[in-house]
Length: 78
Ligand SMILES: [Zn+2]
Image (cartoon, rainbow, N blue to C red; front, side):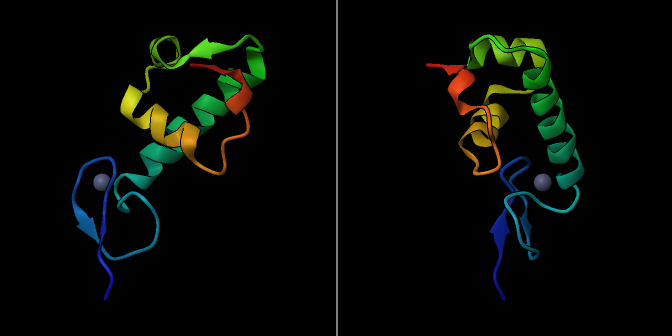
């Protein structure tokens, strides 16, 4: 059996993915919040400002941004 460590809360879980089943809804919610932000805002933004604008922690933002499902990489200012 394969154990994964949840990237949000640090607990171990058996199912697939980066986060445990109890964190998955929070991840999905924040991901759609992030995507909605970029649908409405076309200017480049830093991770700091993005965290402030969306209320998503920088740690989680960094994880979402580096994920393969994130389509707005060009709008992140480094
Ligand atoms: Zn978790």
